[in-house]
Image (cartoon, rainbow, N blue to C red):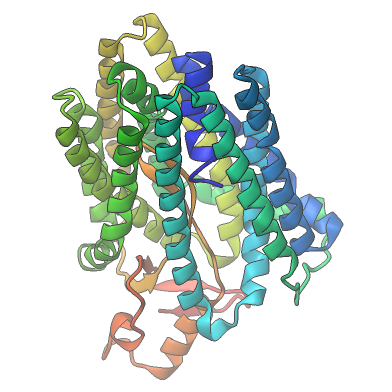
Length: 458
């Protein structure tokens, strides 16, 4: 669904409307609308009294959101209003189901295999996304060769919808051993979000939001720049996007090791500084081999940046407040992305939308990313213990690769407590006592308050 459908939506808008601004904004405006609508998800779960029913409903809505896109592609005419509406419904279901799916999946997977299961699931998800995006690029290139580009998009969206409908069947056959506890929905939501707002004020999340604004000042416009001004084929566009994503997947385990040795704050600062150079490198040359090198470098940089961000997210935010904080962060992140993309659209329009205007946009984005590093001076360095972070890919973009969100499991708390009870932390490290699969490595704080309110040293 993500690789074949969602990831090619900007290219679809560009092909049928020839509007470079719309192609950029369709990746950001619906995300904000979806982030706003997701705030009502906890209330609806409380009303349904079932994680399972809510997740299945969201999955069906996601599949149905492709139908207007299929219809427009089939007739070869696009309505931007209907396109943005369909994308907004898609993102509302996408972001709205996340916390409920997380809570439900945790009750289905036994504690003893939970970390290994979700790590393998993340790998399979990445492989599926990569294969879907690759197949999509090949289908679009074939359609272009026979002058059937619109029909090729219709086929892509049809397969994406069918994929989501088929995944809905597999969701339906799962049981729900532990339904959500009945709560006073509005009161619980206000209490949870109150804690989340306090965490959003932290320097780590402030830095990430400023960096996102600077990144997406130019990020949404890489697709029209590559397809219109560089005149890349869909296959070349696909390969360049796959390069940044695949590089992130390959270097992520190594980055976990780097974070454990150098510290997450230092990795965040260095990767943030290097991320500032990435858009500026696009000013040097349009040689295709050179662009592949830039994308591989970009994937490495963003792998370090996103992992370090997650490590600090886990360090600074107590376990019980993470879901609420992540929900509000999704909203704040979408607002930052939209502000950045709208500012970029204003600059692009003012400069006439020429190739040089895009290069100026990339230059401004690099400068903005560099300036965002000034907010890092507030972050206090802590000692970390090695731990594992598992994520799920929300979407795939040519600018930053995939956008990742963490999968929370209670196993992190139970396993840390078991380590504490059984071993002397001065004699062995957590990494030596509890080897992890070759996936991302996280870091946790020296103390953490868990559900019962006790203070557990790690």
